[in-house]
Image 1 (cartoon, rainbow, N blue to C red):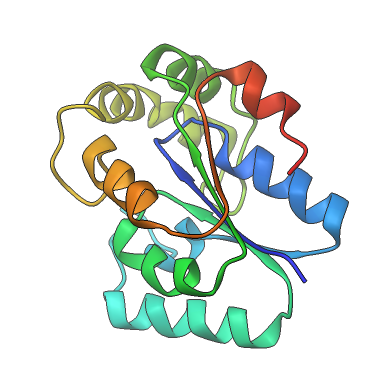
Image 2: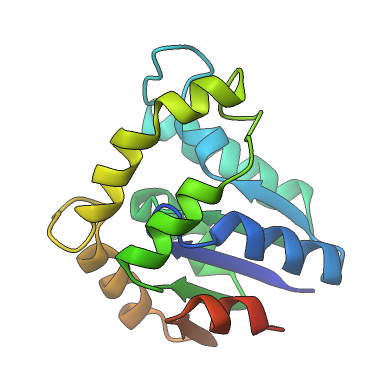
Length: 166
């Protein structure tokens, strides 16, 4: 059974690819945003231990899964159990374009208007990917990818991500 981890910058296409792979392979899908944040406004990060318990419960409840997110701190456990790791790295311009074209995500925002109100902040977040030094940065994702010894792919363009069959 497949167990897939997908990570990369905001707007890189993680959710879209994860849904496609999960649907094609009959896998459960977990977006780490749903584990990382409290469901309230303004959003606040949940304690990491609480998020980790939820991720562990998801993995135990599902034989095959796709887990996606940008949180290297939360990806360690899924990565240790996955059969395939995919690093989406299509560049800042592609991530920004994807974020601007993103349909409403009701599991993250109460309305499309609330999501759009966050767009300028998201553009800045995406733009800073290459210079940040946190767990969401290019450096952190590169280290995660380079340190993974199993089957892995780095997809570096929107076309490669769209064409990926896994």
